[in-house]
View 1 (cartoon, rainbow, N blue to C red):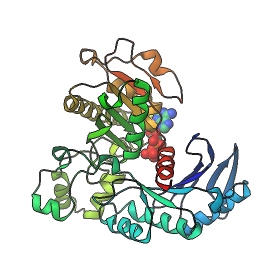
View 2 (cartoon, helix red, strand yellow):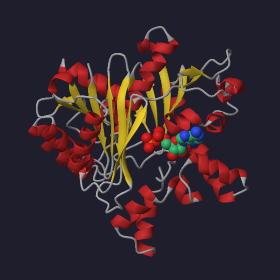
View 3 (spheres, rainbow, N blue to C red):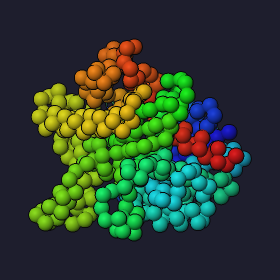
View 4 (cartoon, rainbow, N blue to C red):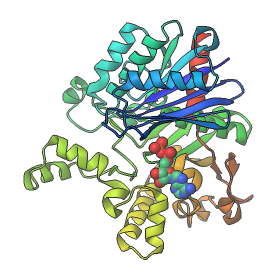
Length: 398
Ligand code: ADP
């Protein structure tokens, strides 16, 4: 049994061919720089299969051409993607709006509805739709399933999902908190519940998904009761290139005084803010190198990041009342020991104590990093959105 998982971005396609039961990855790859005019020797697809790498070079005009080339690479590396060998294709879709809140079998109507939600996610949904259309053309006989980043947060309590603005305007324009990274928060909290043991319905958790994009969630008995991202993925934590929470008045102020229009403000807050806006780099490895070299802007960027993160941890501890586990995941959360220590420093009186040795140990495995006495367990759990999507798609197709 194998499932192809496709994650289409505006100029990229990430994909994985995997067995949803054993979690074995047969092949994976990344198509990048779609739509750019490039020299013939530029590597635009890196395809990994059974320990070997197969590259594709040269311009890739659009997503359809990208997927055709990917299928060629699958053939070259000895994997047959025709109907009988593939049980489903799972597509990551960023915004499900009020319409989609569970994995959904893709039909023409579903594609049109996802496309219509582009209003809410102009940077993401159009790319998802392009990927879905191409994959359906190429694999017309394989069932295709959309898995939504917003789905896990569909049932947020009204008080957590409602913005304090004019209610009629909010309702007319779909303005509420949707939340994102839901597939990751659901998968990671599920793994944590397994590791904690006992009845998952009694587990109160905080999950910190700290990648280039970053979000926090509060989860009670497997259901999200709050999350830091909102109408769009811009709200909440400081991220690689996004500001996270700011006074909305800043947008009006910059429109009036800096002459920025809507697109300029969008670009500023989504692409040129966050760690990158404050320090010039968005990757934490580069940020730490700058801090080590004495760069004060980099140090401040880090301090702002940690300050915001601790605010959310504190807020969710109060929301939940009792916390059983705090878990770090995604690129920064899984790899950066200093971020984990600083996020939870000085919280012994709240029952939170990180074990320095466990925290510093390098590992790709899910693991506890709290001291034996820590009432709140602290964990690092690698996220696996592809596996979660493949499993969701398989469950639906069956
Ligand atoms: P996304 O899926 O949002 O693109 P990831 O979860 O892959 O992001 O995280 C990418 C980020 O993780 C990088 O930008 C970098 O800041 C951070 N990162 C990756 N590896 C390391 C590492 N070894 N040490 C510190 N940070 C890391």
